[in-house]
Image (cartoon, rainbow over all chains, first blue to last red; front, top):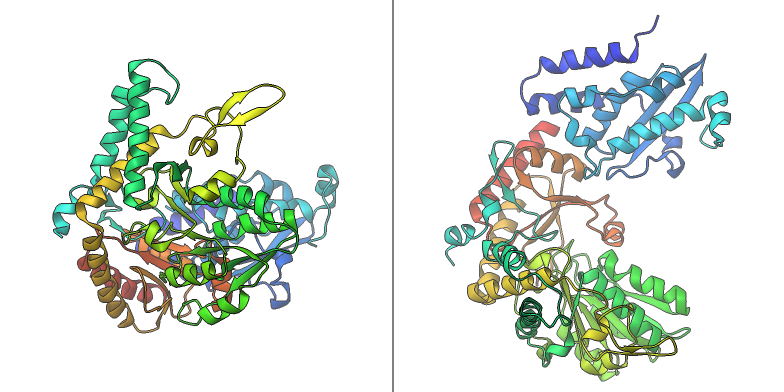
Length: 152
Length: 404
């Protein structure tokens, strides 16, 4: 049985609670970015680019046995770390769970500033793109919303 | 200049950010406001607030007088010959849009040419692209060299019998280059081509004399010159403004209205439709008076020292590359640190209390020419100090260690 979204969120909150100041947290995020499931070079195209980010971010989703999996990359290190956290939480979950995820851990680990609309890193865009993908890769959801599947 | 004393005029500079003293290095985006500007706006709303040019009552007269006084202060600040040549707009962007739209409507036709440079802010690109699309005109671009200096000979080659207007940035917001506008205006005028100067990044750094420059239009923003947001200035030579059709219709810009025909008001009101930003104009005028008291020559001198000191200091950092190394430059440092993304550097510097900007700075073509995703930009002004630059350099080194 896979861990649920909230179980993984709690794990992350736990990990961050052992870190001291902002510096430790950012160093950890930078470290996490290095283990990001990387998207293939061939998929680093405009088609897979997440809009609204100051750094470039590419995201691709797969659908397997009722679950959604993600791969991503970015040219900025901190962005990479943040997206790796999102992937850890959302990858391997069902489309429904992904679309309903509130992702409160971002606030709880002290990264709330990245959700602000003035932040050009587009964490908000990334989350909405991941949720969109979750629907796109699932035929039932796609049909329900009348979406096309050009990103598959 | 006694910078320590001058800093006392700016309440926000006393703020602490995340436990650090605020280092405000984002002055090219917007400058902070001295207390006299804040007070002038507050006093206006507390004691004067009324609509201008229409009431017969005491307060309306008072508001009108203050508003028109602000126009005169602006006229003197840039040494225009007449107050009628000063149009209040929302900012540089609106000023350029006004000229592109109205001048374009009257004077631009199919296959005419408009010249801008490769270092323009998007605000001095897009209005002309919209015009070119509307009129099937052609946009020509003056290139710059690797230091970020306009290539004058290329400009001369671009200027032709088809050129109807040149719109050029005075100081580049992303590179800091001060363009040789006088030389360009003189050459353009020898071919009878008018010139608009985008002064969004120049009027706050050194003295502007529109009569000496002989530019046909000059535009700048209030909030980048220590005044409030939402107000800006379009200066235009009377002969052009008289000939140009109105930009927007509404109250204030008309003489009479019937359903058959409307006649327009005289300058400058022809271009000021609707209730203007009265408090904004008053705040801006207060900011200009404040700069007059400090003296623009003193400001330029101090900022020049900051530029020299900062350039030397930054160049001592291993792996740093500064974009924009023109001989004539204002106190703007646009740089990249090794292969690190500017966003990473900016986020970490923010954590250390340093406010600066990262990204393309609304000049995507400039970044494309240098083939970079953007830069980290520290833009300084007269209230900044060498100690703040020391702090920046110290912390860039720290950020380098964190990212490594």
